[in-house]
Length: 119
Image 1 (cartoon, helix red, strand yellow):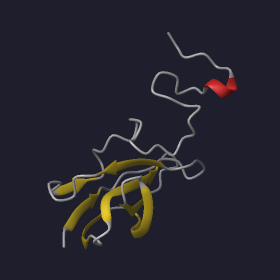
Image 2 (tube, helix red, strand yellow):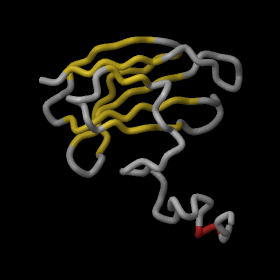
Image 3 (spheres, helix red, strand yellow):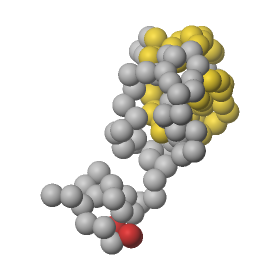
């Protein structure tokens, strides 16, 4: 059984409150989200046993209490070592994006809204 270590840093959100952090398992080969293993505000360093079905982790953060979370996926659990949630790339489109197909890396503004991609 693989154990995963994750460090959630103490970061203030846009309201000046400690950031909300959430961790859940990814299972299977299609990026299906499974059970969650961490939910807290502020810093924490955890070590958790991955279930046999886990193929990765999804780390969410809420930089603003009033908006949806940002997230980053990590798939190499065996080689991950300590996952530092503070340095994950939340601005990169993830392999199993939660955005609809109307968004793409070429046009994240959304074709369905009729907004052209910036040049």
